[in-house]
Length: 80
Image (cartoon, rainbow, N blue to C red; front, side, top):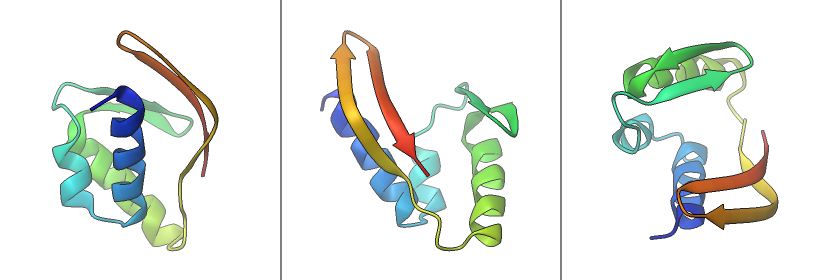
């Protein structure tokens, strides 16, 4: 599965608001940085995203723009 396909699967799962499936895709040592703060791992991500979904229950994430894949790097525009 390409990095682009993984990203699409991640955001599709996130939009389904299935936190268990989303957390299963995140490494426990993953360094996550958001405009609201930084944290490590799926458990912390679950807490953060669950709070956002409580505040904005119809929030969705959409990959836009051109995705560029090279080795282990992917770039895309995310619209939330």
